[in-house]
Image (tube, rainbow, N blue to C red; front, side, top):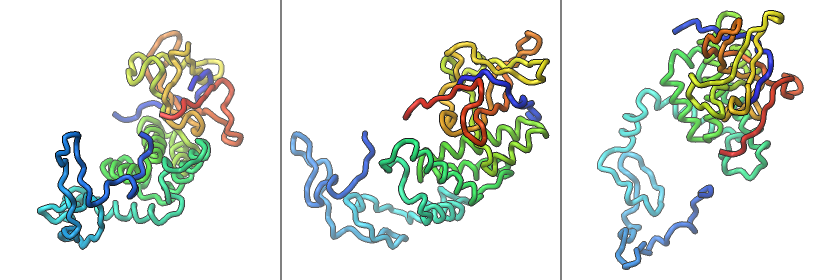
Length: 292
């Protein structure tokens, strides 16, 4: 994202190898040993007679590695220990996702053009927002629950998890915690997906080295606004998730310039695209960096 535009308002701080898809054809026959060059067995031959339900689960899944999963403890108890108070929450999330056709297949497994994949990812994001498993207030008050929810989404699709966390956390929550009363309408719009946002922090020559950021935000007394400017290509905001094609707003981290004096880095809420046409606004240049 390269900016040369007037930002809406500054946010003043108010409180401190290929895709793998395993099938039976990719596995060794169950009665065949896997050997090295010296013909020494690396694994013992599988005895199908030993394959049966695991203790405490009643499972009957048969796979070449099932026999090695026998544990000297009840696995359901381990699940309860690991997931603790989130066991029921996780179950509800996965039940909802797995029974919705829009999540039928992970995005990474679909043979679709990139724009279509983005469209599907957005529709999935909207569905998550509609379900409202975590309210806007809980994003801040229950960070462990929020993290757990992101983890659940990650199991479904990594792209969707990144999309969700970027919009709800690095954009919406950022505005809520770093903004003032006048920014609350943007928070509500973001929660309803009336606007879609991102965090423009990293630059081509300065990653998370915030002190070295080159983008400036100069206060213009004539317009009573801020002019955000990237002096050269090294100051271009780089690797800004969802900014290239999707986001219409950004929280831009830039150096505040007032009367020629640099007051250090501050966050600014900046519109990127027209909300009707979705075209970049005058002075804003955006582009797609391609697949990671």
